[in-house]
Length: 179
Image 1 (tube, rainbow, N blue to C red):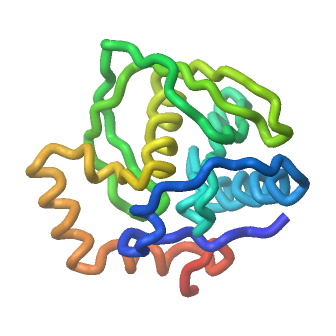
Image 2: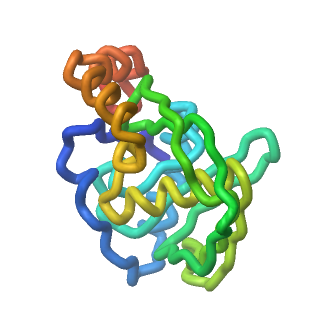
């Protein structure tokens, strides 16, 4: 498998809507494996196709403490809880930025696996946050879009001050950033 370059805020692909996957072939499975490997190398918990410049409705996720991981293809929300969770959220496309973000506490998604088989995944807490964050990416929505006005203003101040570039430069070159 290969490590893929992670796109950083400002790259227009992050604002594009990914397209439905119709071919469940070896190429898709290799992409999913490369995305998992890239996500782990960057110490992330989720990675969407847009973030590696691939406009396919695919995201990978992992809960390392529970030794659970996977890839969801063509995911759709079936149900979310009315109960919400508050917590800091970050993003591999916004290295070094973490801000309080409200998300539903629970979610159930219908999707396909990399072989095209239907599946349902239910997430609570961290997994729900990951699933909804990555689905947002596939729809061209970024976590900063969910921030309170004052937090979004601070995030943009830090981005404009070049803090993302500094954090990205600190990443290993094999995840697509200058060494």
